[in-house]
Structures are given as C-alpha cells and as structure tokens.
Length: 147
Image (cartoon, rainbow, N blue to C red; front, side, top):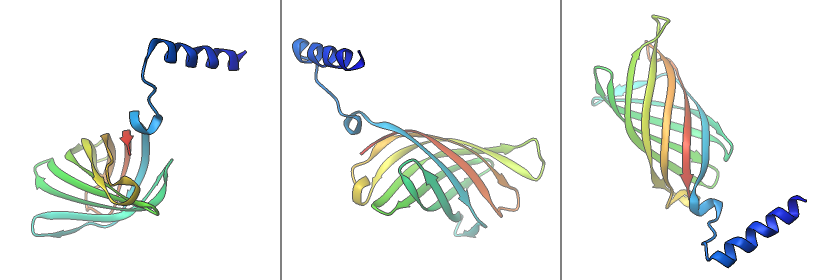
C-alpha cells in the first residue's frame, strides 16, 4: 500500500511539473552536542576547545568569542573527518538558576567550511550553559544544514 502512495506521489510530481528537490539541495536538520573545556583569554577573545557529537559524525570543536557584558560575536569550527563546518553569529549570556553558571543563547549562520562542507549554508540556534570560571561549556546546536 505504501509503495502505491509513493508511486502516485511521484507520478503527480512529474505530471504537474513540480521540481523534485533532493534532501541535500533543500537542506536537512542538523543537531550537535558540544562540550568545551577551560577557556583561554587573549587579545579580547575567549577561546575554548573541545569535542562534539552529531548525527553526521563526531569531532573536535573550537569556539572563539569577542565582546562583553553578556553580548558576544562568536565563531565556531566543527571538524569532522571529511571537512570543517564554520559557524558565525551572535551569542548572549545571562545568569542561570545556579549562581556558579551562566546560560547561553544565540543564532548562528553556517558560513561554509572545508571539504564536504565547503559550500555549506544554514541557520543554527544555540542553547547551553557554562561555568562562571570559564572551566567548561556545554551547548546544543540545532538547525538546518545544506551542503
């Protein structure tokens, strides 16, 4: 029965002249969990390195943020085995329920990368928490990715 519905849908698409769009052309969902370690501060930039896991693979993460008073311009690189994904955007921080932590929110754009991600585009929302002494940060990245 399901095969019949798929065949009918495909026939309708062809008959009506509706262009077929592949998953990679339209974009697909992207989700990653990022864990970053102790931050270093130099020249007004806060840099943290760590790891990430995602449905596209796991790898190394690097976050560089500049700004202050809870408002930061952020750049993140996620390095997969087949390329690097570059993310850029604005991140805000605020106090969390636990006074030793802060919460993170932001919206980032995917700004290409290397290898498989050379022409990548998309939008990512960022949610997370960090420790006030900058010893660790955890973030969840969710959005769409077109490669």
